[in-house]
Length: 267
DNA sequence: GCGACAG
DNA sequence: ATCTTGTCGC
Image (cartoon, rainbow, N blue to C red; front, side, top):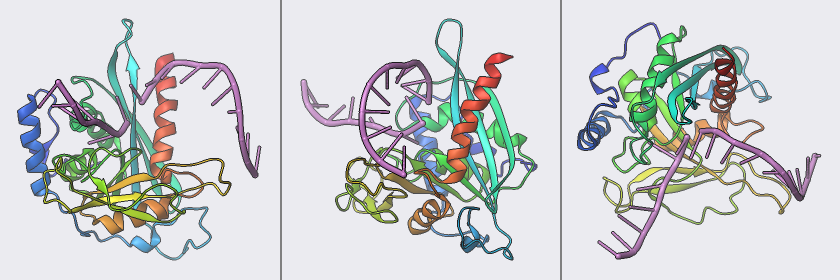
C-alpha cells in the first residue's frame, strides 16, 4: 500500500518473548473494533459469477492473503512467502508476493508473529488501496481475541475478516454438522477465551455443500478481524464464495502462494 | 497430570 | 503449512 501502517507500533514483532506477544495481543484486541465500521458498499461485494452483479455500483477492493513456505537445503522451513490478491468487482486487479525470513515456529495462538511480517511486506508492495482484507486464519475466534486477521487489520486500520478452515477455540451454539449451503451457526466464547463466556466471536459458515449425501464439506470458521461485526463477516464470506468453499480472494491468494513458490524455487 | 489449539 | 495415493462425482 502507498501509505505506511497507521499503527506500526503494534506490528507483530517475532523477537518478542511469549509473554510480550500475548500482552501485545491483548492490546490489539482492545484496539480492535468488532462492529461494522466501514464506508464501502457491502451490497456491491459481488463476484463475476454472481448474476446479480450491479454494473453501475462502484465495488470495493477486496484483498485476500495467504502464505506458503520455502525450505532450505537442510529441509527446514526458513522463509515465508505471502501472496496477496486484490479483487474488485469480481476481477483480479493486482497480485503481489513477498518473501521474508521466518523467525518463529508455529505456535497455536501466535500465528501472526510467524506470518505477519511476510504479509505486511507483501501489502507494502501493493499499489491499490484495500477496502477490505480477507485472511486465511482466525480473527476474533482466538484465545485473546487477536488472531492474524485482527492483528493485521488493526496495524493497517483496514476492515478485515478471518476465514479459518478449522476451529481454534470457542464453542458452537448448535450442531455444525450437515449445515445447508448459506447457513451459519454462532461460535461463542468458552473458558479458553479471554472474553465473557457466551460472547459471540464469529460463525461456522457453510459456503458450499454437495447435493449428494455421499460427499461432505466442512464449514468455514469466519470471524471479525477489525471494523466488521460477526454477522457482516459471515455475510461477506458467503457473498464472495462462488463455486468453491473458500471466498474468492483467499482462494486466489492460496493458489497464487503455490504458484509464486514454484516460480521462486526455479530462480 | 490433563487438555491440546488457526497455519 | 507440507508430503502423497486413492477415490468420488461432474
